[in-house]
Image (cartoon, rainbow, N blue to C red; front, side, top):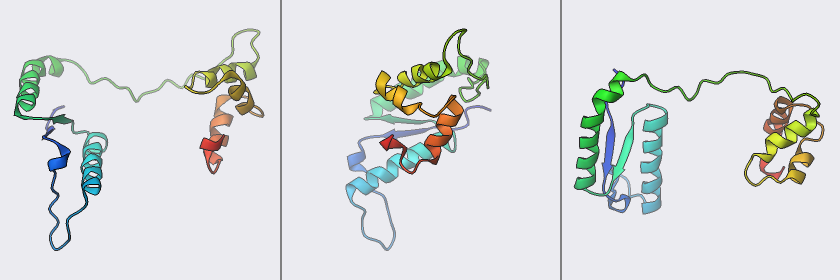
Length: 142
């Protein structure tokens, strides 16, 4: 049984009212944050899909699509995006490992070639770089 339940949140979050007995009403931003955190927890922790729609027509469209697609979905295995192959990086023949590491970091959006070279100083491979970054108090300042 892959799909046991799902949640459809219908309407605008501005209409949200979180009942809290014997307590004052939460401000809108706190209510919104609580609703979004609950949706994230349902999706990630409990693996229950959460859909958001604006009105009844959007909800009906999701339900109709689900009814049409459900038989096809049940025939397929779930995709496993979380499994990784632990293949160590090996530089190409004649390539300096430090240059390869800088090239890997260059793929990160916003990291220039000069910044990548500065970051890899003292690191021979990606694992030592990640370990140093995790040990840093504030890796954003790197």
